[in-house]
Amino acid sequence: MSVAATPARALTVVQLIPALRAGGAERSVLEAGQALVQAGHRSVVISAGGRMTAQLEAEGSEHITLDIGRKSLGTLARLGRLRRILRELGPDVVHVRSRLPAWMGWWALKGMSPKPHFVTTVHGLNSPGRYSAIMLRGERVVVVSQTVRDYLISHYRNLDTARIRIIPRGIDPAAFPYGHRPDEAWQKAFFAQYPNLAGAPLLTLPGRGTRLKGHRDAIELVAELKQRGIETRLLLLGVIEPGREAYISELGDLIKARGIASQVVMTQPREDVRDIYAMSALILQLSNKPEAFGRTVVEALSLCRPVLGYAHGGVGELLAELYPAGRVPPGDRERLVERAAELLRVAPPISPLHRYRLIDMQHAALALYEEVAG
Image: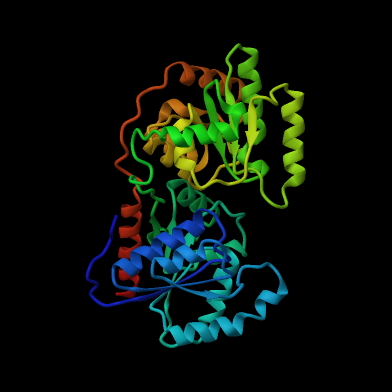
């Protein structure tokens, strides 16, 4: 999917982010960079680097390694170098996507002439206060959902709403094709690796190893379904991460206590999420706090797979629009079990997606850069 076009004039856009290891904001950096390069602009990213750097550079963006996101006094010592880099680059736009890099970028641009345009993207529902307020200083404040827009307006009474732009994150329908089914070789290899997941409908909860993602609720759901005579399997996809060993042990203890050790598998992050989603009877989104967006909701529905989630934040917003049958009041475990049983019995049909496409997000980002740069 291409966004190539002949620009009125070539822009240099610098994006600042803590690192490029994993995550939604990081993925958005790559996607914006790809759009810039395809449209004939110069894309530069400044971060501490990470596994996504290779893809960024392969797609034509430049990367400058500088740790501007670590919360320590040592980060402030890098302000001078960041200022020199920005002066050498002479960007038209500096786009920040996280609070500490935003502060670093704001200070680095002080006194620069001509001064680049300053754009921010609020990717999360950050705790309101002076530290987070730096994200509202952009000439344009991009938010990833109506949920984030409403959150900012409710906590920052003096925010000029005319500067807010809603640019939802998007997915490439070619990467998550409607009705996709993994081939037999993949299925054979997958169930050979995880034999416990065979033989019953698969529920998949994708998410890193943090309590926010609602892993306990997913475990309780499978246990309650079992008590009702409904056999399922549960994949906690991506929960195993370095530094999360105590949490993983805690989840393991709960799984054993609920008597479903043979029905649950926990894994590290995997690259074949498309095939896993496509094999799943339900994709779960059970975050116990509202999230800014819900990319996995869009990915699953793009594949024509039903989603069951708590109706708050960005996930609730997406489900209300795209799949109302999958909404459950936040924290209502009894209703969660009832709705899961209903969806496993007969899931309402899912229409092909015509919104939340990657190309739409990239076009909107390019239009924004061209708007602020005049």
